[in-house]
Amino acid sequence: MGRILPLCVAILLMVGSALSAPRWQKLFDGKSMNGWRLMAVHGGRGGVWTVEKGALVGNQDTDHTGGLLGTERKFSDFEIELEFQADYPVDSGLFLRTRDDGMGYQITIDYRDGGYVGSLYAPAAGGFLVQYEDWQKAYRKTGWNKLKVRIEGRPARITAWLNGVKTIDYQDREERYPREGYIGLQVHGGEGAWGENSRVRFRNIRILELGR
Image (cartoon, rainbow, N blue to C red; front, side, top):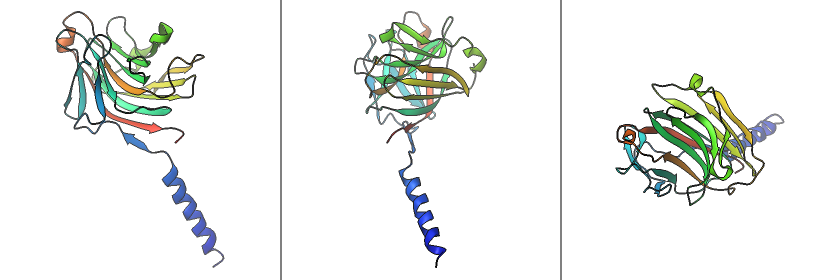
């Protein structure tokens, strides 16, 4: 009896810890855009988004404008993982703590001449906060790429990995954006016919909220 009680207590503690531990949640069910909405920003209606073969597929609108596909709810401190595949050329990105006007931290997926994948851009800062020059060594031109990002605190600490390679480890010194904001997937607008044939795809999007 003396051994059973401590064992039961230990089991209860383990179960309680497991129940209270943060859990990964799917942001995309692979079938629909439930939980997402078009954000008519950056001069466009939000871009053209469809669900194809288990992936969210983004493209420019017919007038070459873009926009964001944003989450319906806001998030604060979290880790997010996803897989993406970009045709060439495509200018896209993952937006963090996005305001209603579409401004937020951006992890770049700019797969064009002179572009950067896995760098950190902030319009409120007037441009790049981090430019990772060696992204092409980690990037897969064919197949799927894995992107993992962690953001916490305010001013924000942002870390990102492209296919397991750390491309961003940045501690901001300014409170550029609110503590909570939307997560956004971008299709950048621009002139030229590239948007008619080039697309960006996202799948296996999941989030781990921190501090809850």
